[in-house]
Each structure stands twice: as C-alpha cells, then as structure tokens.
Image (tube, rainbow over all chains, first blue to last red; front, side, top):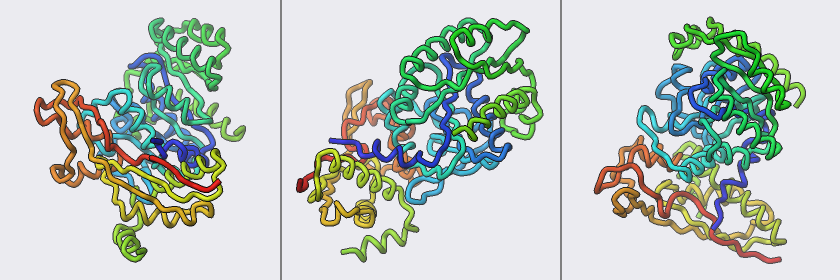
Length: 247
Length: 147
C-alpha cells in the first residue's frame, strides 16, 4: 500500500521560489506574528506571497490577520483565499472556531493532504508558520519540501535560546539552510543573543523591541502597520526580499 | 461510459478535489513504473477510504483524462474501504457514516480528513481522541504492467 499524495508535492511547489519556515524551539516567542507580518511585508514590497499556517492544533495567524469564515475555492484541488494580497491557507478554513486535537500521525496526514492538494501557483515566497519545537511538522517539512529554509525566532530569554540552539544544531546536521535568527521582545541593549547566534555561524537578522502596542493591533492589519514591531519586521523583510533575486 | 462522469464533472463545476488526488495517483504510478522498468501499465488497484467521501465517478473521470502514454490502456480498479474508527480512551470501535454529518462538516472532512477529530466524537464516551484504523483517503494498492 502506497500513499500517492507524497509524489505530487514537488509538482505543487515547483513554482515557488522560496519556502521559509518561521520556527522556534519554544512557544510564545512571536513566531505567528513574525510570520504573518513578514508575509504581509513581502507582499507590500511587490512579491507574490503565500502564508501557510502549519500550527494545526493552535493556529493563530487568522486572528492576527483578522479573518473569519474564509473558505478555499475548489479548482482541481484547493485554491487558497486571498487576504491583503497574500494567499492564505490554514486548517481554520475547515475547523472554524472548534478545537482540532490531533496526534502525530494525524498531523503528518493533514500536512501531506494540504501540501498535495493546495494549488499555490507562482509565488516568490511561501511563509510557513510553524508549531513550536522539533516535532512532526519540522521533520515532515524537512522530508517533503526540498528547498525549505528556516527563519528562527527567539526572545532574549536563555530558555528560548537554549531550544533555538537545539533547532539550529538539528538543521545543521540535516544540512537545511537557516536564513537567520530574529530576536523578538527585546527589553534591553544586550548583545548576548546576537553574539551567541553569530558564534554558531548563523546570520543575526535583527532585533525587535518589546512592543506594548502589538496586542491592540491583533486582528487589525492597518493598526499592525503602525507598530514598531511591524517596522522592524519590515526591515527584516527587506533583507529576506533580497533572497528572491538570488534564487 | 464517459458521458456520465463527464456530466457529473460538469455539474460540479469540473472543480472537485478528486482531480488533485487523481493527479497524485497518476504521478505516483508513473514514478513506480519508471523505477520498476514497466513500459506499459495494465492495472492499478486503488483503495478509496469512505472518510474522505471521494466521488468515484469524478475520480475515475479525472484519471481517464490525466492518463499518460504509458497508462493509455490502464484499468483503474477502485474499491472503497469502510472508515473504521476506534476510541483511544474507551476502546469502542465504530464505522464512519457520512449521513450523520451536516453538509459543511462532511465537506471539511472531505478536504482534510483529520478534521474528523474536530467534529466527530466517540459515540460511547464522547472523546475526540480516536484512531482512524482504515478508510482515511486514497491508497495505491498495486500496479501491474509489462516490462
């Protein structure tokens, strides 16, 4: 018995120049906010962008984008709905406000299903919002997406950095490119995270100060653009946008 | 034979999710044929799990339209498999029945069968923690061909 879906994934992703997994070892570091804002920012810069929420059990990008009740179109597969010019795919399109309690094998199956039937078309960037940790989704996308690259988010906390180091170590071992590390929720001028990241031979993409306005902007993209958070992510997006010309 | 599925496909806007699954089946079959040195594929046996509620007429039609030269005489033998679910909490086993679901829920499960864990609960204890023992989606069972 063979799962025929695996073989079609390359075909589905062949017109996507860059697939970026926004990941971290820990939860609560701001991955979803960075992923959503990065995708919006790259779109504003004229790139064609997709945003894929792979945090199946705790999706939140739809809350950040302020979308509700979106349903993909069917056209020989699934065509993601558009939000602010970006193509947006999430399990929430089907689960709505209900919980999706999934175990590992179910997560892998849902991931394979979405990769094998979603028609993204041509994209400069597909940004994936990852669940925290080094679990099923990380192992599956490394296995199934040939040109995957990682953008890693940490906070100034030693706890977050410790898990990020483990993620970086795994990705190095698997020879998966890491675009760089972003330090989010920064409250002081310490350069220790930057130094530790650079000591690992990884690019430090930038720091984002702890922004007290960010909570009020959730669900309102116009408000999000006015935050220091978005300004800093936009600077990071400029660095990442340059990847597109190099691909 | 073609008129009926074509009409179905036309009625459904020629847009069903089955098309994407048919592409996956054709792609996987071609990859296996290439690997095994098969020049002409004679028969492909498929299992379609009832949880995904595949429209077999649309799937067959899509397969017929997507055939490559190596598959021009291929017979696709598609059998359905009951979706058997088993509760991990109380051990109760049951069969998925589409008719018990509303249209939106059935459609959501059709697109991503794991959504079953969102909307279906164990009929005995009410837990969403169940295992899909069989009958989830489309599986390639065997390929016969001429080398």
